[in-house]
Image (cartoon, rainbow, N blue to C red; front, side, top):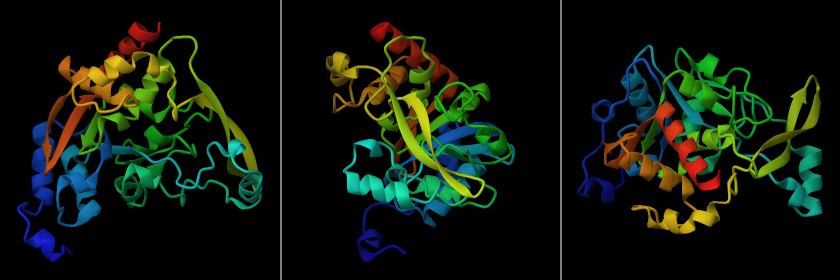
Length: 289
């Protein structure tokens, strides 16, 4: 329930019907696939919280539409080979194997992915680090057979999002968090990509097996973005040289790929996934080809 400071504040309560109207005005396509990134607090005081946001998203895409989000795994031991020995030993000995049915979504991505993950009928892909969650008629297809290696590339849920002519919806979320741009990093045919190998525990029969995964470097960037730091910083709305994805997205908007608007009280944006991916690949080729 809202506290007195909210009740006495200048902003009105944000309802499900208002969210649906705003999402439709922004251009969310009924019957389509929408991958959502959200900072729920930016939307204002939502009556019903994250549950209302999920319901509004489902209303906006309609009964034939599907909502998707990046989940990851809150307890994943990414980079553990560089940890102190006592920490590494403890995790190797007793970290429970990744279970798509119970593993929490990464908290740093906000509250919405975990809300979607636990929603009745939700499906989750099998990858512990790059895993996605989805709700709707195409959820099973989107999350099926997530590749173990190169999990942001061909055959991934992100590739299927493009195949479905889906959309990327930013609900008050920073443009630097657009996961689809990792798909562009993975698919653009350029040499010299930064790559990583990491280990995660999986359940194989009755045993916990630590598997090695091979991927582009999604933590530090698959390309040397520091070489174009001046351009990144010169992009309006970008405040840090580390925000390469925000610069790509902002430049895409200027080029007419996507549109901006408000959902609730939050500055939001909507991108056609296929066109954004094509724009991002071209952006990377121009700078690192």
